[in-house]
Amino acid sequence: MEKIKVIFSRDQIQQKVKELGKRIADHYGDEEIILICNLKGAFIFLADLCRHITSPISVDFIATTSYKGTESTGDVRIIKDLKMDVRGKHILLVEDIVDTGYTVDYILKYLSLHKPKSLHVCTLLDKSCKREIELPIEYHGFEVGDHFVIGYGLDYNERYRELDYIGEFVQP
Ligand code: 5GP
Image 1 (tube, rainbow, N blue to C red):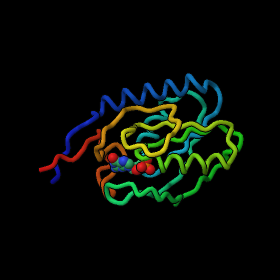
Image 2: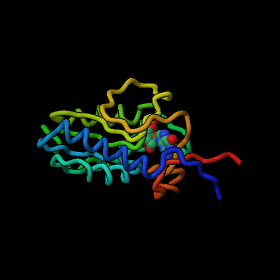
Image 3: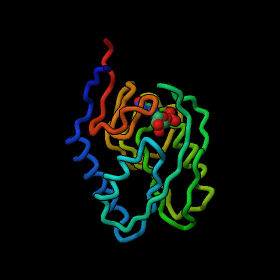
């Protein structure tokens, strides 16, 4: 059984998600937002975040792939497309973590082809020390260093998503 060190506790995460939800609602007010969740890693964050946004919201999902094990490959592909028509709408892309930035850069370029009214990014975790592409990120929760993190939606080979905290493996 792997040992996991807690980086952000359940309470820290819940507090941060609440703050982010309030900032988002303060910004959009009564305007409708379409929250687009990048699967699978952001599904738990989205579920908590959307319940702290008092603005009118809709939710849609997109899925991309670029990771093999613990490494980002930079070769991003969309494996599940949007269902909603987002033209002329405010879009907020909800991400679990931005690492090199290739995934969000790719999704932003793709979403902008749909001519939204506005397009912003909300990520729970920002691994900015690993960034290879400059990105506009309006909302970010926590900064993380060069660690591979798991929990609260984030996996290692599809495991550990259900943890209510964010942690990293402790080397034996
Ligand atoms: P990027 O394209 O920015 O390098 O990587 C973004 C995607 O890689 C994220 O949506 C996430 O799925 C995955 N990722 C990046 N860093 C981590 C990490 O530390 N842990 C996990 N589980 N996934 C990560």
